[in-house]
Image (cartoon, rainbow, N blue to C red; front, side, top):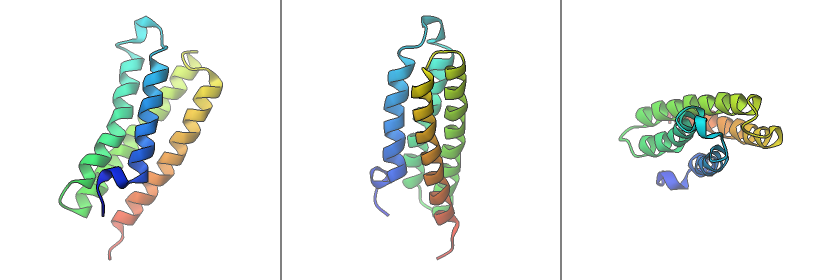
Amino acid sequence: MGGHRDLIAWQKAMGLVRDIYQHTGEFPKHEVYGLASQLRRAAVSVPSNLAEGANRNSRGEFHQFVGTARGSLAEVETQVEIARDLGYIPAPVAEELLLRIEELGRILTGLRASLARKD
């Protein structure tokens, strides 16, 4: 396997991080240390876990880190929905983010399944 930068999941996760940072920058000032910070941390966790897992010594460890990335992605999904419901992210923008999150979730699920298969 190539490095983590070759992973489509990592590339898509990095794009999601950029968009999350852009949109959370528009949150109300009182959310800087609240939802905005939490959403940013969860988003950053996704590609970070993929990078760490891809650079571990075993397939099993990578499998575990992909699972952790999937969990962080679920946090991002929930937090985007909260931000939409609070009016911090416009509904059309949130829906686009949620579609991308769903796609990335499918990719992570497939990656995890491929790592679980025995050769």
